[in-house]
Image (cartoon, rainbow, N blue to C red; front, side, top):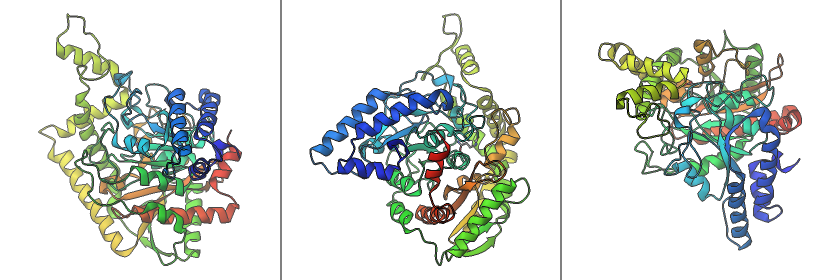
Length: 498
Ligand code: GLN
């Protein structure tokens, strides 16, 4: 395997021991990015020069005998929804094109503090609204498993960068599934931490009560190592939990589920799910039973309300959050020619700067929040949210974790759902409940669907602040896959993709 195919854990160890330099590792990724980006388009922005300078700095610190963390010198790609000083932050939108942020997101600061090397910013659906990355104003990202297919969304760039070996780690954000759903359809690992477990400071807000930064990786331990870097209390985020982060790295290394109680969610499966998705899910559940877990069927009846409630709460919060893009403070300004009033400039700018999906959600959210309809829509959705939380609470009295497929289908074709918003929204059927309730949840690759040879994801949901349980089960899932295939998904990816 060449350097680009190694895990972040291995790269970190090689760099720490001096067997390879961070500069070599970074250069290998920079070269590969240049080779495959015309096909994949994971990145909106790559700064090779700065990445190599960061790598060189880490190499010097290590050469001087400094003791750094396990990911020092390891490259990472950052979703373009996080602020990183010196690089544009666009959120995949024309309205922010060229905007340079004045401060770093806390998670970006922690990545830099760990001595990691930032390769660039990854493509995404505009303002994280979408499940395919086709809503990016800068063109779609292609799934490395099949370039005619979507890489998931909104964090399709961060997932495709991993599957295309353009970065060993990436950073994502998950409001309704934007870390987990792309992970599922690209055969990678993605975890949405407990709400409040990772800081939202410097994450451009879509729906503040749902958004959460999290790690994307090719292996479970890699995701845990990154999780450990970014997690923990941040006074800059009023919803940050002032408690120590769970030991996710230790949990990822346990690789054993003996004695654990695992609940299969009755409502997430069945009709509308691809046969291959159901088959791989079932096999994984059986493998976990063989490994000593107790499998129980659990009913969460209100999960059926999650998608509908999400598409009221999320647009409501987004319509309010996106009001700040008013042509005065950030990015684009249209029609400022001395003849137009400030209000006209705002209108012209928002008309030109926002894409169709963003406009759809602003209109929907504004309507749902309007005085005559507030109780009926937003109020009802909040009640549904309470019922979903109650379902989780009741379930976690019976079982340690809940499991389901991550997505009903494998990666669909580019263009297939772009004119059918409801079909697009259904890609997040299984992931949204955990955003509504704020609990920890991750997606792990469990092989390829027999009918189309595309990756299938397995979702593990754990109680709030028990992110360690997500990794513990994820690690066991990864082990069972090694038993079946004799190698990891990572090796499979390296073989099948460029
Ligand atoms: N696909 C979902 C949406 O369009 C979730 C997006 C996200 O998690 N950012 O809202």
